[in-house]
Length: 410
Image 1 (cartoon, one colour):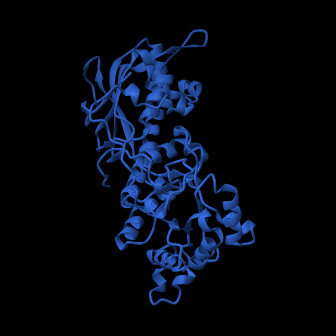
Image 2 (cartoon, helix red, strand yellow):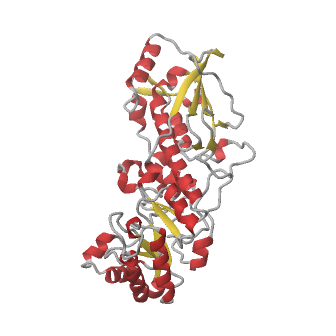
Image 3 (cartoon, one colour):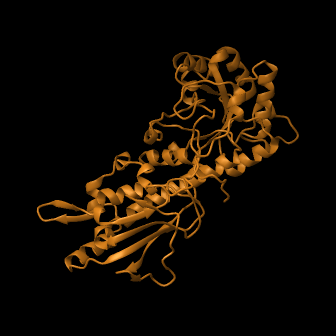
């Protein structure tokens, strides 16, 4: 997996379904929408105080009491904490955290929040002694590029204060880094064309908030649910869905017209045009009926079908689903009818490889919607005690790996 330089990318200024950036409701012209690049958010050249960069702990709405109790932790960590406390042992350690893949680091602010809010120990009478003030943590920042086995965080202090948290903070890192890295891969493949984050329906609803943030940092120009946009105060974006068209008796134009009448002042209106598997005809019909209210059309043809516009061609058997040839056919039909400004959004089975194929052919696509591919794979993280009472104490095969890029966490 290769990643472009410049660190994390953020949505802003580019077009797409929300022309003025994520959550924006401004409409722009087609040329700006097609060519505006997703601008990278540079990684700071100087290692500034982390307090200016971290998301506040309240962002994550952590179930603090349950995390403190070990409810979400592997039981052996909970038992370890209980045993050490019962024996009066309070080992001073250095815990080192690293990932096993190359990609973008996500979830680090959440991991720090877990430590900040949940490190400590129970006291007599049901109280809680805060552990965070007694620990020292150093970490990289959200969206930074990392290499395999590069140290992304160290925690120093009494191990009993945070022994019960390893499962939780490693899980946060693993999930967010996976999504962030996958999104960056498709953003790079899209060559600056906006990428819309569409996997909400492919996973449990509880993961939406953090996944949306990871996609945002990695360069996705929009997300599909308000929950996914909640960590930066944005809004979900979307198109006229097939279900609305079905609710209007299969009449794409009628559904699109009413959708535009109600929401044109709030969102850029994009109409799905594959309901009858005749995308070019439906695209022109929608453009004629909606006029300036139509921002774009979306192609989402089933991979089991060949669109009417491509049927009868000698190579028909390889033209199932959304293919570059279909985008060309729709673009030509729109242009011939005088609708050059109407954009084309494509979705359905897209991943980095498919986007790269589209780009290599020069397919006339203005934006890509990507779903389940952004949740696939793994991005494992591991934590090891590498020092005990100031002396090397790593298990065989591991050692302290200092990283000058780490920031002190206040």
